[in-house]
Length: 364
Image (cartoon, rainbow, N blue to C red; front, top):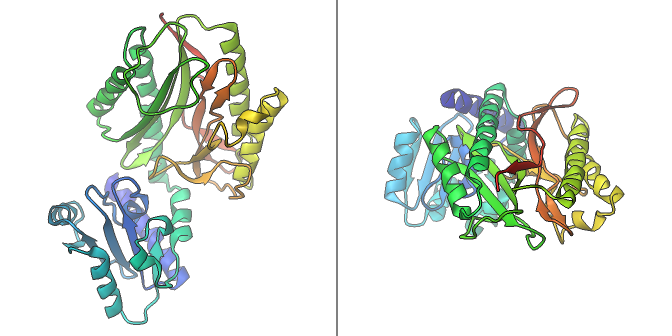
């Protein structure tokens, strides 16, 4: 599937370059933000910055600052010319100068080294971003498989959550299960406790206690494509306040998912979620003081565009993939999460996650 996905991405990229009149595009990536680089080369960066020059005829050159990284890229990407230089940006600039007055785009703007960003060349960020947002059938199949892994991974998380266990032990169990099942890449954060918990984070050595709300966000990847699920559980018996609060979160998630359809905007989805909280007197908790986004795009990066916020006017189109998650703080019970990955269809959306939208309870 990987080679089929890469061939489809390269075809779409060449068509976009032809439409824009670009003779080449320079794409930068690193180990954290490598989605643009992976889209155009199928090569994730592991060590340092990697710069790729993709020509309109399909030729690809890659520059890195490490000889070992250059050797890995050459082995992983047949047909790509991979090399290294003490200053890859300077070497890329020399190569671009040799191309003369050809039209060369740069992407992504948020990762471009200053030496490249300041030269006035066309910005290709939005073009590649648009390509990444709408998934091809083979990309969607990878995301469905990732969503199925997320569902199964959450079952492992629930089994691991017991009184007295450290937070890091839960994450270790989940990570071990993902790797045993062929998934080497998972972005995961969590939280545990009560009213004092304001969000999720990497695990620490806190021990779980009876009555804790335990939250998590699992984001496994298949062939580089991430899908995400957000769920909350209670250790022992759920209180009336926890049940009442969770019912609002479920109502908000379902309102947000109902708003996902072609022609709607990211703002429409966020507003549908937030309006539920406002009706329940919790409008303060959908502001940036308590929450970051009401969802976001997914694909080659765990947190891609568009951000699901009331001021983001990106129009939803068929085969875009996002997660809808009204994750925020509740003033009585603490931080709650609930979210499902979805694909925009011709008439609405396909929910990729199959885990029930319940406040799960595990033995205390």
